[in-house]
Structure formats: structure tokens, C-alpha cells
Length: 319
Image (cartoon, rainbow, N blue to C red; front, side, top):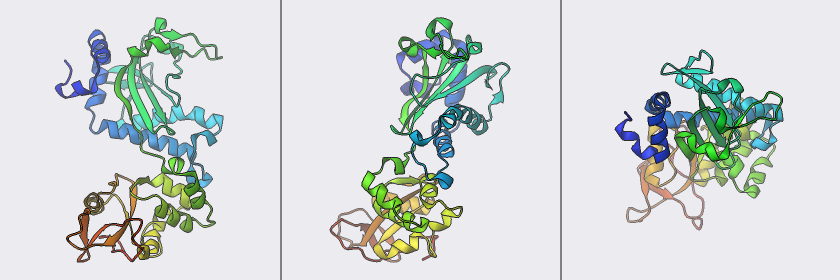
């Protein structure tokens, strides 16, 4: 029987597939029942792409800049990282053993291009897709049947799912948000301005000036700074927080107090491993804008027409 709280996540084909294939249903229910599973899947996929880009050492931020061998390695990394994150047991014949059932894992950056080995026929595959340009990802379960596959023309005879049979995939999560690669998606002129600086600290300062009220992941910071001590470049005492405070910028991290401040200001709220930059101005109590009390004074997000002025010190940080 399916859990009561998952009905909204399923479509009619999903229900039919899980009822007709009890093992598929068991694995589906197990994965959906894992704590914070959707967020953890998304984080694994974000981390995998970031690891391949290796921005700290290479300065790369675009999937298309990867070598072919690196792109090929993505599937192996996803498989390893998911197993590590969810502590899946090793499979007998396939990659994993989930709820006592063998499950193979296949990842593709191109939707529908999962390369399935002949030995997976008859088994369940966890099919995973993520696209950094679209900032979307999906994961579903597929019972591999020979009649639902395209015959491979490649040397290792790997197979793909026929387009007309993708409706046989029982989606766990379909077309969900992948944590954004801000550097990839920011305005090209702004990106050029950020990367034009010779030193990492100056690049990071410009990033926080130009990308306001958006969640910025640590890997973006790492790629822009290109320094091992990149976190130091964000903090006070010479980092971006102290460098930009005279202009009114607050750079909030994933501390609970910072998240509360971001929410009260009506800005984006940083999640684990993220930062949000916003420029504030002091306001009177009657000002209708969302505001927050810091240092005994009331602050709101600054309008473009309001001149830069020194901002407050965030709790838990230094000047």
C-alpha cells in the first residue's frame, strides 16, 4: 500500500506502475520515505557538478567547458555520492541493494540518454537527470525490459529507453529545482566585470555587489575567489563583509539568525552552504518596506535611487 502523503507527488501512470510491479513499489516507497530525500538528492547532484568543474583550481563554471572524459565520469560520481549520502548497501548484481532489492544507478545530463548495460535487463534502474543550464533535475525508477529499449550501436552495446516508453518510469521527483549555479546564469556583462579583477578578494567583493537578493552557493564563492581560504574572504576582518559594509551591504550566511534577518527583509533566505547579499538603508518605523532591527536601528533593503551608506554589523560576525 502506498503512503497516504505521497499522492500529490504521483501521477496516474506512477500509481499503475507501482501496483503492477510490487518490487518497484517497495523501492519507490523506501526512497520517498528517506528523511529530506529530495533536498539531499539535489545537493548530491549540485556537488557532483561542482566537483567536476573544480572551480577553485580551474575557474570553470560551465558544464560545456568539461573534457569528454570528465563528463563521462559524472555518472560514476553520482552513483558513489548517492550511495555515500543514503548509505545504500552494495548490490548483488547491480550497484545498490535498496530495501532488499537490487537497483542499478544511471545518470545523464541529457534527458532520456541514460546508457543501460545489457546485464541490467530485468532489474530496476534508478534513472537520474540533472541539467545545470536549466537548473532542473529528475529521478525515477524503471524496470528494464528488452522490449522498452533501443538497441545500442556503441561498442559496449549499452541501451537507451525508447522515447515512447519513458512513461514506464515511476518518477520519484520530476523536474525539480537544482540549486542554481549563479555564475553560469548571471548577466554576461556582470560576470565579465566580476572576473576581470586580478585578485580573488576583489572578484568576490564585486560578485556580492552585483548579485543581490539571490542564493549564492559556496562553490560559486570558491570559483570566484580561487583560494583555499575562500571562506575567510567572505567574513569580516578584511573579507567582503567588512569591505562592503561601508556601502550598506549585508552578506548573510546559513546561520539561523542570518536566515531570520533575510526573511524579515523580504530577501532570499540562504540555505545550507549558501550566502545572500543585499544592500540596506536605515528607515523610519513608518516606512512600509519589510525591515529588521539591528544595532538599535531599523533597516530595509535599499532602493536603487538611495545612495550607499554604511550598514549594520550582522550578529555573530565581526566588523
